[in-house]
Image (tube, rainbow, N blue to C red):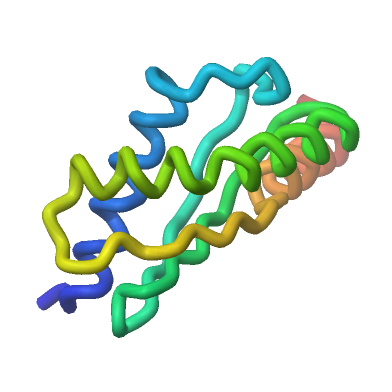
Length: 114
C-alpha cells in the first residue's frame, strides 16, 4: 500500500509538470525542463522538487533562477489544483541523473562498438 505522502508527492509532481509546460511563461526556462521527482514532508508543509534541465550550465542556472522566482506563482496554482489543507512550500533542486544516464549510455555504446 502506498502511503499518503507518496500519493501527494506524485500528485504534486504531475500538477507541477503541467503548470510548467502550459502556464509558466518565463523566457529563462528552456524547452527541456522536467520534474524528475517530488518529496513532500510528512506534515505537508514543504516539498523538495527535483528538476532536470538539459542544456549548458548557463541554461541550468537560468532555469533554477526562473523556478525560484516563480515559486509563489507555482505554489498558488498548485493550491488551486490539489485539494489538500496546506499547499507545500516549494524548494527546487537540480537533478543531474538523466544527464549522467545519457553519459553512461554513451560510454557503454563506445566500448561495445555500436
